[in-house]
Length: 150
Image 1 (cartoon, rainbow, N blue to C red):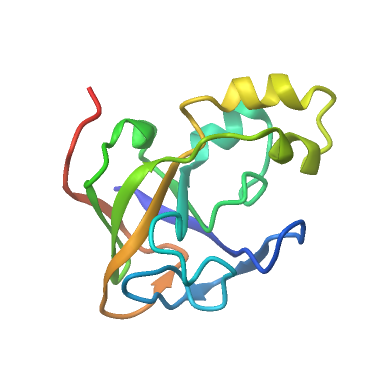
Image 2 (cartoon, rainbow, N blue to C red):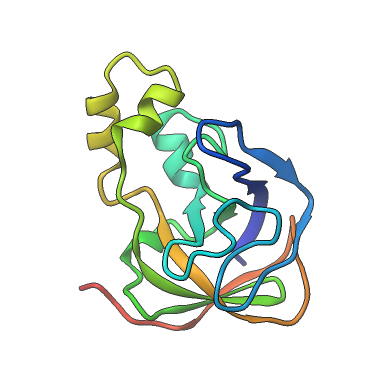
């Protein structure tokens, strides 16, 4: 069963991600306490742990709020797909496009090569469509309604 392995708060541009054990969500936006909480399209980024493993970084290094395990094909879910993560439901708004800034923040030798390695694999950008309680590390993750990109 796919699960939440790490939760992070993005507290500001260029600041380190802060790991937390639990988050509350705002319907129509993102995660409370996160700098993206008021965004309507790119409020929450979700990445599967296999991406971190394949490019040699730790959870949070890709600036995601939710790191999951057990959904290696996460990036193939299309716009409109609904994900249930703990007690919240997220709507997928599209892929999270990689940028050179991520490589620079991680101190990689070639940020452009790092960006290329992440192409199509940096996870998904979402917004919260329902919140019935918190999300905690260890919570189950499920795909409720699938819209495929293929």
